[in-house]
Length: 151
Image 1 (cartoon, rainbow, N blue to C red):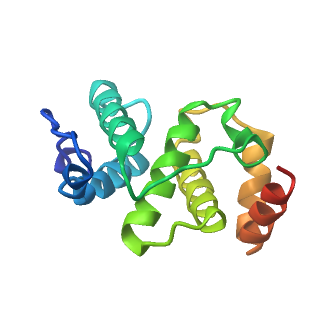
Image 2 (cartoon, rainbow, N blue to C red; image 1 turned 60 degrees about the vertical axis):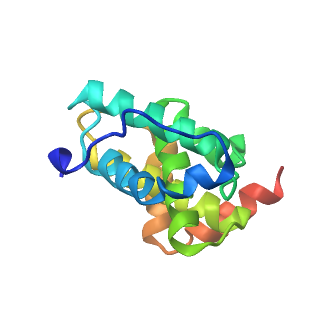
């Protein structure tokens, strides 16, 4: 997987229409970031993160709302916040659904995938372990809904 993704090098993101041409690349970027261990291909990971952030910042169809109640899992492992944003973005691009609930849910699910795939590379975190348990019980959407209601 890690070799099948190439980070775009010269971006042209000047107007709204420019973002559309990179949507498939954004989805592949998020998939690559989820699948590649955080301690491997660190230079490529930095470039991929930079591409993703640059694209998200100006994308006309993606608007991410970061709420501490939902993303507090990133305190111990800050790289999981990038996973959250990537998962939210990928969800919007694949479904067209821009609701806060579903975006947050997709973001948390992405962060869980990255955490589970990097148990040896990330710090053990009680908050994330609890989220995995909640997810395994099929209650993650309800948890996200509850957290959003607190804001």
